[in-house]
Image (cartoon, rainbow, N blue to C red):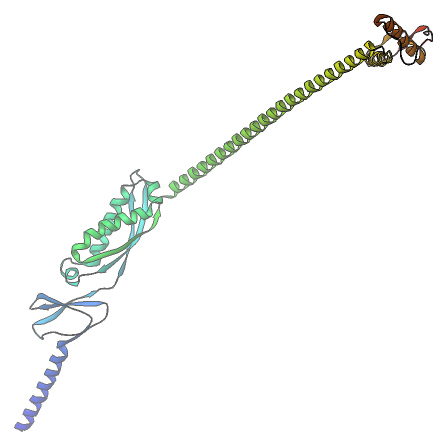
Length: 329
C-alpha cells in the first residue's frame, strides 16, 4: 500500500515537472517580439525563435507585432483657410521598432496613433486654401508624415507613410468650381484665338511689307533700265546724227535722205497714233516723198558746196492734197 502511494506521488511529481518545463519554453513566431516581466517589472524582450524563461517569477508581458501595420483614418470634417468645409479620410502605415517602448510608453498604441494622425491632419489641411488642398496632396502627405513621425518617436514607432485618400467638398462648391474651370478654359481659348489673330495680322502685314519692298525694288530697277535704254537710244541717235553729218560734210547726199526719211516716218507714226481726229497733209504718191527728199538733198549740196553723190531725185514733187485720217479714240 505504501509502495502504491509513493508511485503515485512520483507520477504526480513527474507530471508537474513536465508542466514546469513546458512553461519555461517559449517559442516566439517570426515578426513578433515578446516582453518578459520578472516579478511584475520589465526585464527583457524575446526575439523570434526558442526562448527560456524562469517559471513562477517571470511571465510574458506584451506580444508586439514588429511588422508594418496599416490603420484606416476615418472620415472627418475640416475647415480650410478660406472657410470651405471638406470631408477627408486617409490611411496610415507604421512599424514598431522598439517593443518595450511600444508596450510600456503608451497605452492603446493603435488608438494613440490614429488620434494623433487625425489631429495633425486637421491642423495641416486647415492651414491651406481649398485650391491648395486639392492640388498639393503630396505636400500634405509629407507634412503630416513629418509631424506625426516626430510625435510617435518616443513610443518606439516609425511612421512609414500617411496618405490622404479622398477630399470631398460640398456639392454646391463642386458645381461652382466646375463653372469656374469652364470659364477659365473659355478665357484661355479666347486668349489663344486673339493671339492667333494677332500673329496672322502680323504675318499679313509682314507679307504686304515685303511685297511693297519688292515692288519698290522692281520699280527702281525698271526705272534704271528705262533710263539706261533712253541713254543708249540717245547715244545711238547722236551717233547716227554724227555719222550723217560726217557723210554730208564729205559730200554724200544719200545719207541725209535716210536720216530725213526716218524722221519723217516717225513723225507720221506719232501723228497717226493720236487718239483724236486730225486734218493731215500727206503726199498722194509714195514717189512724192522721195522727190521731196531729193529736193532737200539739193539744198544740202548748195549749202555745203559738195557734189551730189548717189542717185538723184529730179522728179517734180507731186501736188499735195488734204486727206482726212479718221481715228477713233
